[in-house]
Length: 129
Image 1 (spheres, rainbow, N blue to C red):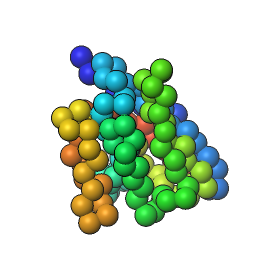
Image 2 (cartoon, rainbow, N blue to C red; image 1 turned 180 degrees about the horizontal axis):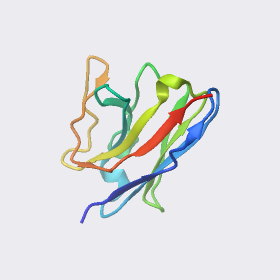
Image 3 (cartoon, rainbow, N blue to C red; image 1 turned 30 degrees about the horizontal axis):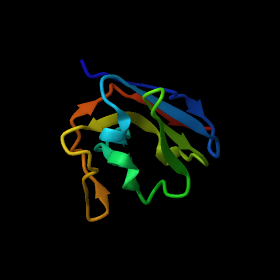
Image 4 (cartoon, rainbow, N blue to C red; image 1 turned 135 degrees about the vertical axis):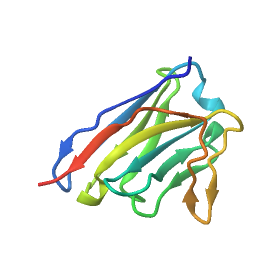
């Protein structure tokens, strides 16, 4: 059974940092695309970052470029999202997702689409003073 379990969400002050983790079962991370999405209160879910099969593509939304970094530890089957210089607009539930069908991040017009095969339940990040 495929499971993606996120952790690391917390309340943090503006300018602070957090590292989210996503533990993945069943799949070998090199063979799949892994991504992070977020949903702010009252807004649609948006793509934040994605790493395609064999890390050929590394995508970041414009709003997080230079502040967020996606990485993975194949030995631990865990994907990370390092988030620095957080601001209140980064508040939301962060979801880890995986695409096994073709291992690609679907990016159209500079936007990461929600075209993933498996999803975690999310972890809450709140940025507030």
